[in-house]
Image (spheres, rainbow, N blue to C red):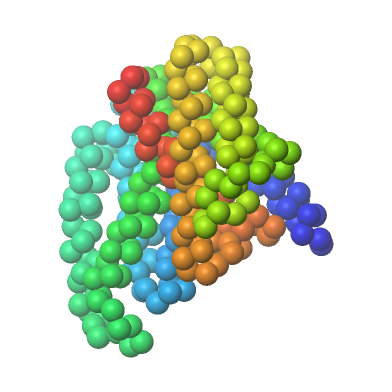
Length: 293
């Protein structure tokens, strides 16, 4: 199959799976994105291994699931009738218990990672400090897993899980990508960050920003309860921080000498390539939602 055929086929399959999981139920949303963020973390660790680091991939993956479940437990409303709220009561307890569990894991994590390095010391073919492996493992959790776990903050409101909020975020991110690509191909002349991503231009960035704002206005049909001002602020966050997240991942790939973060989607690269914008967008949106409701 040609590269274009692979991109179309696996793009359609991925889109159907993604949209189906966020629409069907809160459980499918949680399981899907828990798996997505763990795979993204594995891809990050794989790239770090390309330059000699040996992060604790299995331990990191397990901790990433605990972080995702902990954040989900804290934002799940205890009296919701949604099945995810009832199910999470048995998995992580109430919001306070989830917070205690998450805090305990975070406090113990450096100790666990250092003990792992002590058990493996000295490592063959690794000249730098074993604490570098600890730092890389922690960085992966902070760069990938924690931001992706904050998607639960966006997906839940006082009434429980609302798939429309996740769908709106996806549409905004896609609008930013489409607008930047179309404007860059048509008008692009001035490079945005030539040393990191030579194909990106200021004209493309402006096009992506404008189309994202237009989508933010159109989101009134999907989320009429949100004010126009709030929707435009969210669209502005996506339009600014999404491309920054993409540039950060491009810099990461160039620094380790790889083209794609993974091969899970033929023609599309890895999941870190697909969701890199979320890593900068979600912390800002979660903070915005916590401050403004």
